[in-house]
Image (cartoon, rainbow, N blue to C red; front, top):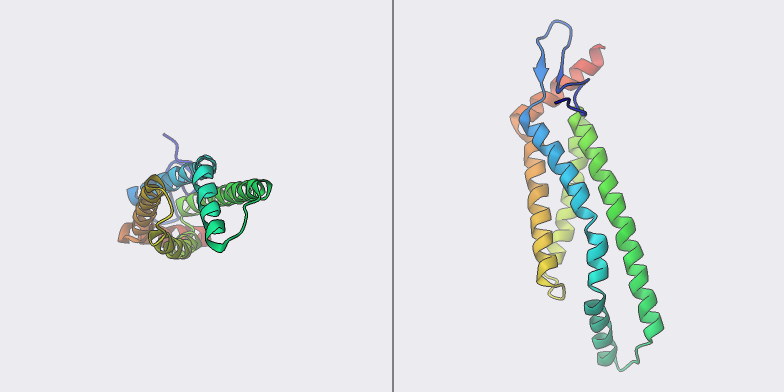
Length: 176
């Protein structure tokens, strides 16, 4: 099967004076997982809409505590605003995953650095979500699975075979 992300094609590259070097399985696995993550994050859009009743109850409870009346029209507007933000964020994250899959599949060293920095930023958000007891159990479970896959991706990008691939791919690009 042709490898769309290889340098230059077919999962291998040949540089002058060197033997053919296949793309390591660690990179192949990381790229596949990035594509999976791009698809999984899009489930946040309908998930946000499924949580309307829970969010509505949360807003109403908060309003009662503060002694304020709840304006249903305003609450509906807030929920639509949240849905739009979630959709825009999910699409941006999906595109970022696809960009990282392409960059890392081609052996671009910046790809794994950017992926690692984004992972660290996401880890901070994940830690904040762990203390959030308002979300439903299924959302917390989805976050844990998503974070676990992200952790596997980062580990795969930094194992020795992957590091060699990035070095050799960079060397190949400089020589052509």
